[in-house]
Image (cartoon, rainbow, N blue to C red):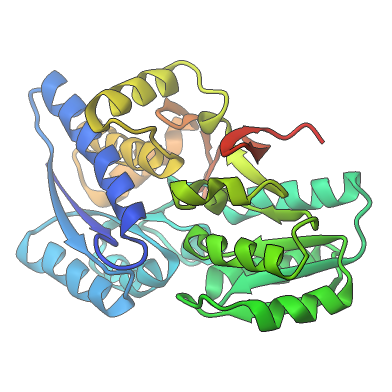
Length: 333
């Protein structure tokens, strides 16, 4: 059984690609050690570039002959999806954008979804009676959609500032936010930008303003974790309250890679495992694999318990966390 995988293995987000590649490597080892039917992975580097993603999926389907593709990142998935849909290839997309499942017959999301994090955001804002809120967000469909959804939920931003991936100087936008005197800042972006943002918040005497964010706070560089003492962020229970299969996965991952796995690695492990179960539990045709996975209803995997929805989406369990002396701990308010 062959699965094609498209990840950012070089570039700014290569650290995410490496985490997912590690999770996939463990899944392949576990599957092949326990089953007569083996699994083979063909991996391509997207560089997080949609054009590279298109080239990769065409190679995987036309040259390598794969019927199942796993890809990471909304820009890449948005470019790849019309091809997989047209060729009737199963696509598992690691993307938070809700649009990847719209008008789709052959796409699954074995990954956390946008709606879950936003529900937790509105819950937090309501419980703490915040009204003066600013937002900093990265350009791109996933982030821009989050801002729209938050506004639709009734949140009124006193200041909105958008930046492009790769920017490092945020002082101008932070000064504008400072002038608006927010009680809370929402930060929606890849974690690679966070060290610069938080260093500059401190420089501008804004370090006491609480910052609310999502799972990207798990992807910040290790040496920067002391910066985020005022950050509150959503986190899968896997990262802080692991049990069952999650504990086994964490131990196996640490033994092999000498580092603690992230949710990216756990979701990648579960995605490959579910695709294998779908292919071996049916005749392997794409539609039957899709139906098999959807009909499971729920699954206990490396990430923990996930609910599999009829539209091919999944839902896990999220909690709030913060950094305490560089270590992630449950947020207690």
